[in-house]
Image 1: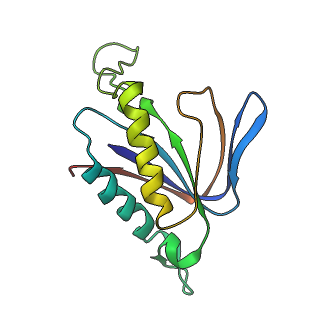
Image 2: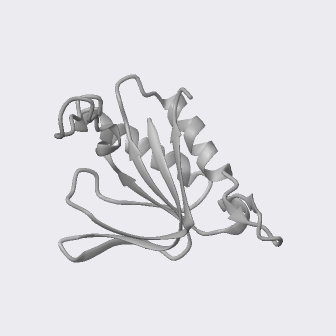
Length: 146
């Protein structure tokens, strides 16, 4: 499981020019799954995301989590996090979990995040337009098993 975390001033997801979800302040997560990912991975990474200290404290030091500063999470499914370009120039997605299994894990991940903080999803498998105002910019890759 991979989660690309971006601190955001404001972000949104639309499909066919229709707004699906938006946040004004918080985190945007791009989330991908691979074979062998489990509920345990989901629980660990959800807890890591909400406790990640990447928001500024009163001294301007990244020392606070989203739980401490408030905000929301925009969670977007992103199978391309498992792209491999080892051979040639066309990415292979063979390591990405198939959609039927991945959607179950994605929904479970969002449910787990919602235990801690408001989490707004994109639409799994849809052709989404994601607008992200990355704050900082702060972008961190989290992976299960590491």
